Amino acid sequence: MSDDDTWVALLHRPADPSVAGGVFADPRFGDHVAFLQRMAEAGYLVAAGSLADRPGDGMTVLRLPGADRFDEATRLATEDDASVASGFFTVEVRPWRVVMHA
Image 1 (tube, rainbow, N blue to C red):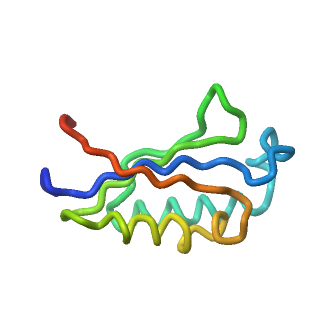
Image 2 (tube, helix red, strand yellow; image 1 turned 60 degrees about the vertical axis):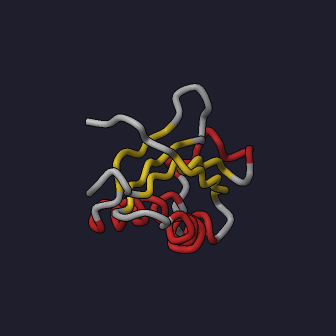
């Protein structure tokens, strides 16, 4: 990967706030885990996890090799993640300009 890679932050939130405390027990959460596994297998997943101060919310960081792949990252986050496509989670896809990393 290079400095011209496309980085994105995906901010996930339950579409129905009443399930926020129980997202991990919901069977639809498995669709999200499957998406994350596909992103890991593709070499795109940098990190993923829940936000400790907001029950049910989470963040995923993806790094796609090459520049100008934001539209592809958006498609992956909204269509390839069945938990989002089905309406279980909403996702905000944010471009991230990384200036320093390990």
